[in-house]
Amino acid sequence: MERATVYVETSIISYLVGWLHPRNPIVAGNQMLTRDWWKNRRQDFDLFSSGAVIDEALKGDPDRASERLELLSHMTMLNVTSAARELAAVLLRETRLPQKADIDALHIAIAAIHGVEYLLTWNCRHIANANILPSVYNVCRASGYEAPLVCTPQELIEELPNA
Image 1: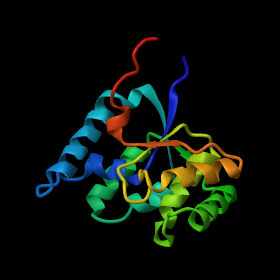
Image 2: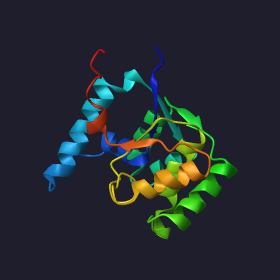
Image 3: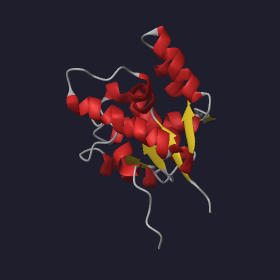
């Protein structure tokens, strides 16, 4: 049986290597859930990322950046194509994604262009946002691509029941 494909966005990598958030129990819980998914479920999927994630992963604390790059080195890197850049521009123009979310639009576009099934993220402001996603899905389809199903690790933690 073929494994599903997952585009791993920067917030996932950051939650895997970051210190547990001491002041926000929700964020700390999401970090623990991400680590649980990584330990117990990632092997059930083909993992992809991109140079856009690498660029973001390089920012911040050098030790954490090194750990993020190590995790990314085990994934297949997708090309940031001109088609992905064009789709990202359309997403910014025709959806409720704000202009400052250009890198988020690019993550969605890269996954869509390459036919990845899921986009895994904790970015609920611009990516996993139910107020924005319907228009994102519509724009991708109108542009000739199927958008990835955007989800958090919580939604991919459970194994599918046998049919």
